[in-house]
Length: 285
Ligand SMILES: C[S@@+](CC[C@H](N)C(=O)[O-])C[C@H]1O[C@@H](n2cnc3c(N)ncnc32)[C@H](O)[C@@H]1O
Ligand SMILES: Nc1nc2[nH]cc(C(=O)O)c2c(=O)[nH]1
Ligand code: SF4
Ligand SMILES: [Mg+2]
Image (tube, rainbow, N blue to C red; front, side, top):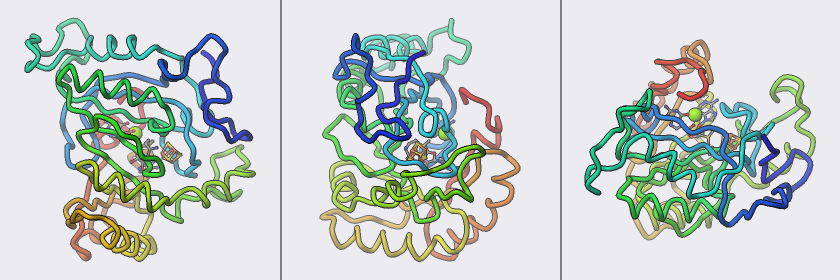
């Protein structure tokens, strides 16, 4: 394992820790690559291959992928190798493939790939990966915090803008972590109206907000209104999703009903965290 961060806790420049023998245009720091059911959003329940890159330009206190943000870990893989690993789970039937491979332990994800992280769009090579997957007939979902726009083969932009309640403080930071410069840096970076507007205009988009409680709703309403004014495309309420905050079953049990009630009250959509319900916080799910 190498430090694949793209961004250390003190440093600020994506790419600064790329090892000398790695060409960051053609390789990605991969934290995990696995097959599961899409647990969040409009495609919930869809068998999918997940490619989780390491490194993020934000530091949400509640990040459920600590080892891609606060303590980024993974191994650099060439884009070719990532495509090969994805194909081991099955190739889309539309490209003449036989569907799911029989050898993989979880092998049902022949058509959908979810590129996530960390923040996958900090990495230039994500564009190349998405192009190659699209060429092979995969449907691509990109899970992104919405602070970066790239031109890429994205079928569904699953954008999760980060609310004020996500900002790390010494009180809420993960155990043993001092957020230091990240409290202000996260706050400064978490909303980029231009990037959000371009994502909404260029791609089929869902806006998937992590909700910690009723106090988050005014900020969601204001942001959605702002984007509706800026964007040249409509943003219907059924593309605005409220998702309960929580990494474990116990935590989601605490927030689930409040968030469902808020969705009903405001006419937004609710999304479960199906993978947490099914597999709790196990890695590779
Ligand atoms: C780990 S993030 C990676 C993609 C990107 N960095 C982002 O935040 O959208 C994947 C998804 O998990 C969500 N998420 C992270 N921590 C969470 C938590 N504690 N509760 C609910 N959702 C969470 C994010 O909002 C995002 O939708
Ligand atoms: N099953 C499952 N569905 C997911 N949808 C988005 C995820 C993510 O971490 O981006 C995720 C994940 O980690 N697991
Ligand atoms: S933006 Fe996404 S990956 Fe980054 S810290 Fe927040 S939840 Fe984690
Ligand atoms: Mg996750």
